[in-house]
Length: 340
Image (cartoon, rainbow, N blue to C red; front, side, top):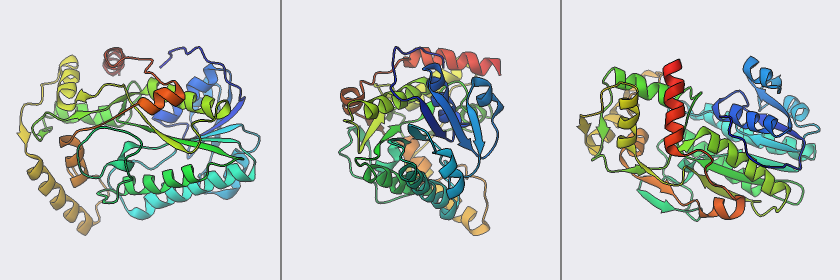
């Protein structure tokens, strides 16, 4: 993080839900750097965010009173908060990702907040087939293998349907977000590599989009700028990435080599991984285990199939281009990882 964009924003006060998380914190940093008075709402106090200069409100986005207070006198809301992951009860995902989003929209309307940018996911269109260069015309998925994707579809539909004269909304769909500060994807990946527990799923030729954290935050700022000025992004979703897909397993091995971790050599077929995922899901469900299984059907699909998207719409409407290349992002990330 820390890339300086030459932007001027017309809005002065922003609220970031989930502002203490990986993406939320990056958005907060960009906003503060551009002179926007920023406050966040999250479940805890975040000293690091407060040290940046943001105000922290502690609470649940499902709470009407708290959200009514949080959205008072702000010009824009960045709704980043979400329950992520690929395992857990539907009730948890529904309450946070669906009802929470409903509350955010309602609070924006109640307090006359004119703009709302939503952090979505490409999983909303992943319907268990390869996606090679698909764009925003892709239909929403209907056959879900995880509650996260199902809940995000419902939430994104609400966000885009809420676009109106009094409330301009749009949704961003960044894919596989990574970079310094990543608390989930990279640490887990590296731990599996060090323990030699990672196996290539499929034939290793699948191409996927990835999104460096600075670029994701930059896209959020550009989306907000569009809503505040041209307004052409209103009611629309946008895929966000590095612009060029990577071979997933080659990229993982490149990272491993830079971190002095043995490359992934062994492989398992997609069919075998999928069957194993089904067994794990059944056992974990029967025993009501809360930990995420080592393999699920959704994970097998994600690790074996291609899923990359066109950024034509984001370039056209938002003026989006990555501000940090994949190579530079990898260099910064390895530097951060080695310093941990």
